[in-house]
Image (tube, rainbow, N blue to C red; front, side, top):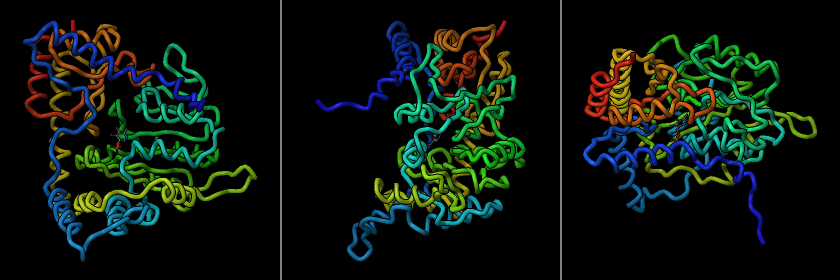
Length: 412
Ligand SMILES: *Cc1c(COP(=O)(O)O)cnc(C)c1O
C-alpha cells in the first residue's frame, strides 16, 4: 500500500477557527435573535479598487481577441509588473532591488510555504510566538520538527515570545538559528519593527550566515514615517533576507490572488559540499518547474495599483480600515481595556482583563456583546491572555460592535 507523509499527522487539527465556529454556532442556536458581529477574520471586506477592475476588464477583452491573446506568461511574472514594483516599492525608498529579483506569485501564503523547497532539512528555525500559523505548519509538513507538546509547541523550533513585556519585539536568540521568520507590521499583534530592531536582526543573520524570511504583507498600513516598509531599507539585508509582499491586504486581492517575493541575487546559502550557492538560481528553478505564473488578467489588475488612480484608491482603502482600527482602539480604551497595535496595522491586540484566558474573554465578549474576535492563544502559547480584533469590516459593524462593548463591557 502507498504510504503518506507522516509529518502531516503531527499537525494539530486546525484547532483555532473550527473551535471559534463551534462556539459561535452553539451560541447562535441558543440565541436565535442575537445579531452577531464578526471581528475575528483576517480577510478584507471592501470591494476591489476601480483602477484594478478596469485594468482586468481590458485584459479580459485582450484575451478574447486573436491579435492580443496571451498564452503562458513568464514564470517569474511579466516584466512590466516587476519593473513597476521595483521602481515604486523599492527604488523609491532607496532600496537596491531590481526587477529581475522579483518573482510574481499567486500569494504570499503559498510563497512562505514553497520557499522551504530550496532549503535543507537540518536548518535551525526560529519563529515568533504568537505567530502566523503558516510558518509553523509548513515546517511541520516538511519534516523540520518533532511532535508538539501540550502548549502546542513543536520540538525542534525556536520560539521567540513577543509580548507587552518586550514591547512585542522578539529578542535576538542567544543560540544560532539558520532561518528566521519575521512579520512586520505583525499579524496577529499589530506590532511594528523600528529600523534599529531590524538592523539588529540583519547583523545577527549576516554574522551567523542565517536567512531572514521577512513578511511585509501589511507594509501599506504603516503610518509612522520613521518605520521601515521593506527589510531592504536596512543596510546588509541584501545578503541575508528574502521579502514576501502581497496585493491581498493593500488592494483587496485576497480573492483575486497576486503577490511577489524578492530574492536578491546577492543571497547565498551553503550546499552539502560546502560551496555557496545563489538562492536566486534555486528559486528561479523551483518556480519555473512547479509554477506557471499568475494570470495575465490578474497581473494587469496588480499593475493598476501603481497608476495614479490606483495609488489614490489603495490609499483610501487602507485609510478606511485604519479609521476602523482607530475607532476600535479608542472605544476599547474607553471600556477600560489595554490595547496594542492598530496604529500601523489593521489588527488591535487586546490584553484580556482581570486575568481572563483568551478563550474566557472570547466567551464573555460573545455572550455579553455578541461580538466575535480571535483568542490570542490560538496563535501560540505566548498569545495567551491576549485577543485579536480585526479592522477588516464595514464601518457600521465596527461602530455597532464598539457601541455594545462600551455599553455592556465595563472592566472592573
Ligand atoms: C494575509 C497575509 C498574507 C498574504 O497572503 P496571500 O496568500 O498573499 O493572500 C501573508 N502573510 C500574513 C502574515 C498575512 O496575514
